[in-house]
Image 1: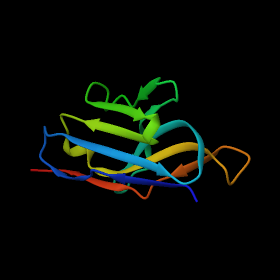
Image 2 (image 1 turned 90 degrees about the vertical axis):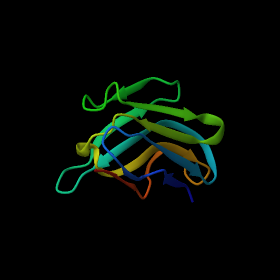
Image 3 (image 1 turned 90 degrees about the horizontal axis):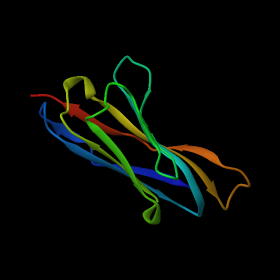
Image 4 (image 1 turned 60 degrees about the vertical axis):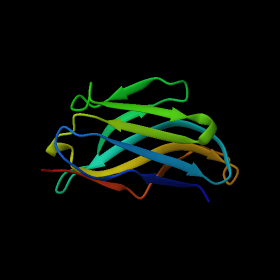
Length: 121
């Protein structure tokens, strides 16, 4: 079974930094786009950043210039470097990836279990 496991969340003061990681495991043939979404209490889940297998990226306007997404294809891992954090960045952050595994003949979309980020003084 394919799994996405996030790590790196926690409590940080405004202006601080955090680095999230998400590792994909299982019988993986290939991973296409990978990304990070977040969901704050009472709000819908929203895209934070996404990166293609070729390294092209796109970001939510609210995080441009502060967050950086990257990936290590050899490790099947995607990262989110978050700088200049604001209280409004508080949310559960979810990893997402389009993965082709040996279990299925087509690419499927997978979600991680989420990691909590709290920005507060």
